[in-house]
Image (cartoon, rainbow, N blue to C red; front, side, top):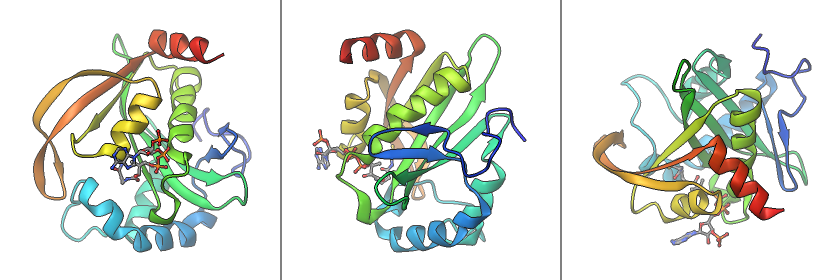
Length: 197
Ligand SMILES: CC(C)(COP(=O)(O)OP(=O)(O)OC[C@H]1O[C@@H](n2cnc3c(N)ncnc32)[C@H](O)[C@@H]1OP(=O)(O)O)[C@@H](O)C(=O)NCCC(=O)NCCS
């Protein structure tokens, strides 16, 4: 088991006011698959189309998230509401690169029935804390399509800085799509949090 996974599988990795982050556990399978299925219309336009035969809205996706929850290069955490412990979404760090880069890409989604409550804004803040303290990264990047207004709002509110524009950057729902590149270094993160105290 990765040293970053708390010793008890049900322990939260990061806790906030509205949500907490916890590594997936086999017990989460049913709720996870149900939420992904119910949120298909909401999520599919914003996610990469998976290889043929892989069900991104079924059991395959839970298997993938569970197996890669904390392996070299990846961290995948589920997001739960503090109020009722309901699963509400997921946040991940991918392509974690060590050496002189110490960086990763962040990805996130919230179930269709849980949007617009500030959950992801808080979860991204918690994921950044995880990235800069537990995972000990120096830089986190998030790439967002220019028409994804809720995700852009989350990135801005979380203190990310717009670095540039990448044409046809990522395959989203089967199309090579332009993205804005937003990033944050640990120095930015410390400054952002100091300004909020
Ligand atoms: C993007 C996503 C994660 C946001 O999650 P969320 O929990 O609803 O986010 P929050 O409630 O914390 O914040 C959403 C913000 O977007 C704003 N917003 C929503 N729709 C908007 C729109 N059409 N135009 C401008 N801002 C908008 C909200 O007002 C809110 O900002 P505010 O708190 O300042 O008012 C969620 O919509 C989602 O899962 N989308 C599909 C997957 C996805 O896009 N993932 C990210 C890929 S980069």
